Structure formats: structure tokens, C-alpha cells
Length: 505
Image (cartoon, rainbow, N blue to C red; front, side):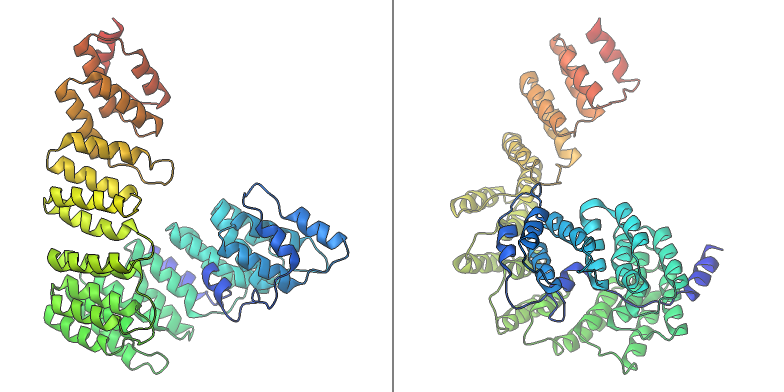
């Protein structure tokens, strides 16, 4: 029944892509944000570093002094702010533009503003703004960022409802919104709906693009019972479609399906064909295919692509080195990974700890803790700054090798990262260290440890239970523990209640 309603809804969809992503909009050569000369007022605005500062008085003052601000100048300022991740300031300038009678907002302006609203305030605010967009052309342009927001949140109901609403507005279609819907169904593992989307595209005479075919193939490759044969059927249809060019990305999609199905021979044959499609001006494809060779444990293929990628103009990035190191680690050749790591160190301009983390993780997973410790110290000497992943790797490795004192030091290092990112230490590691303190009978250190965990909102009943037991064993009051539990809204269980009663008694 749900599928029937979905199909009916899709048959009514007919709308046009209004705008690309924010990143593509501000970088496109054809974008109206591009301009020739930097307006003087831009320098004043770019001096503002805090999002609390408001650029509007600067603009207003400039205009009141008799100066003119053209649309292209305002868009150029906005483009610069977005590139600098000054999203609040960019949004404020858009709002100011909307209130100026002689400026006005183009459809693409509305599209970019909506995406900024999503970034800063979320989808609810964006939905409200979308309903207030004054004309059809601007709503047409803003629909794709809103749809992408629903896809990112995996909100199938709202995404489907938006598609139907856009049809009702009389908007015409391109393949991009359909591709977004297919991404959503793949992410939510609702594979059966992907072919339905393709059916509606064909029904509405919407030409499939390369991404459409790739997503369609993935639906058959990931869906249970669909099998490789269906994916091959899609690929053959793509080959016969004169409107698209079969490139390395589509071949790589098919290779990945073969690998998942355990058909290595077919995967290698298609991979060899994909190599011939690689660009001599862009390295992306080389590293994507490299990961597929690594999945096949084909070291020769990895190294061949690594050497070929060096012929592509431009400097090799840290991400490139991370990829080849990850591939070699996956294959199990740590010796060669070390050689390439040394090559990176000799060429890097700034020490990126993400590269050394690849090797650090490999050492710890293979029980080479001494090598891992040496690499960590070496990284610090080179000026590398540990990130949350560094500390997580060290913690897991030291716990695995029963070097608990060092695991505790690593955990303290991780605490220093908690204010700077959204990462949080795995609960299992938090508990292992707490259990270690309990085993040693070290109540003082456990108290400090739990206080730190509590400060970051990570404390759980199981953690507090250990601390309460230790207080009972040491015959020490635990008022501060009960206060922390109360602040954390911890709901006690039947096992914890008797412990608390003993402490209160």
C-alpha cells in the first residue's frame, strides 16, 4: 500500500533543478557571485572576525555616505564570507539585500540563503523561509537545497512530500532531485524504491545522467536478492545510452558490486578497463580505484596506480598519502607503508597527524605497541598535534595490550579534545579504565576520573555504580557522587538502590 501511494506521488512530480550545492554555487565560473574588483566596504567587513559583530551598519553607513553598492559587489562579499566560513555574516547581508528596494534577490540568491539557514539554524527555519519565498522561479531554485537537507536527515516523509508539493507548484524536472531521492532510499536501505524512481524518470522523459545509473546499480548491488545480474543489466543499458559517457566512476560502481558478491575475476577485468578511463589531470579516480584493488588484496594494482598518480600535475596531498597508506595497511604490507610514510614526511609542508594516525592504528591493531609509542613521540617531535583519533587509537591499543597506566594517560589527553570537537570516547573504553581503578582499589583517582567524565556529560549508571561500590568498600561518604547522579538525571536500578541505602545509612 505504501509503495502504491509512493508511486502515485512520484507520477505527479515534474520540476527543474534550481541550484547546485552551496560549495558549487560559490565556486562556479558562471556564478553571479563572481566579479572583477573588490569593493572598499568588503575590507571593512572582512576585518570582523566574530560572528557577534554585525556587518549591516558598515553597509548602511557606506550607502548613507552616498556610495553605491551593486548586486554583483554584494554577491562578491557574500562569496568571500562563505569561503571563509563566515556563514552568519553572509546570511545577515542576504537579509539586508532583501530589505533594499533597489537591490532585490535573484533565484540563486534565495537558494544560497536557504542553504545558509540550514547550516546555521536547521531545517525548521529553512522550511519557514521556503514558504515565504515570493516567486515561483526562486522557489524552483531553492527546492534542491531543501530536499538535500531532508536527505541528510534521512527524513523520507518530508522529502516525498516536498517532491509532490513541487509538482503542485507546476515546476518542471531535471534528474538531480530524483538522484537525491535515490540517495535517500539507499541510505535508508529502502532499495525497492530506487527502481520506482527510475521508472518515474523514464515516464516523465527525464534523461538519466551518470549518477542516476550509478545509484540504480548500487540499489541492486546492495539489495537482498537482487543480485549481480540486475546490476549488469543496468550497466548494459547505460552503455547503450548515447546521452551519457561510461567513465571510471560507473565502472568502479560495478567493480564494487562484484567484490561484494565475491566475483573477484570479474572485478579485476572491469578494474583494468576503469584504469584506462582515468584522467591525466585529476587524481581522484586513481585513489578510488586503488581502494578497490586493496579490497581485492591486489598490491600490484595499488602500487601501479600509486606510481601512475604521480604523473598527474599538481602536488600530492595528505589525503592522497592517507589513501595509499590505508590501502597498504589493509593488504598487510606495513614495511612498504613505512617507506611511503617516510616519503610523505620528507615532502610535507605541514605535519598532518591524520597521515601518521593511519600507521599508528596499524601498529596498535597488530600489537606493535612499542612501534606505536615511538611513532607517537616522533610525531610530537615533528610538530604534529594529536587529534581525537590519535588518542582513541592509543587508548584502544594500550587497553588491548594491558598497559593500563598508558591508557589512562591517553584518556587524559583525549579529555583535552572534548571541548574542540563532537567526538566522545567509546563507552567501553571509559568503563575499562574505571574497572581498572576499582581493581586497584584506587578511590581517589577514580573520583577524579568520574568527575571529568561527568563534566562532559558522559557518565552512566554503570560508571557511577563502580564508584558507589568503591565508596561502600572504603566506608567513605558519597554525597558528591549522588549530586552528580542527580545532575545527570541518572535513573537507578534495583541493584544500585541497596548500595545507595548503605551509603545513606
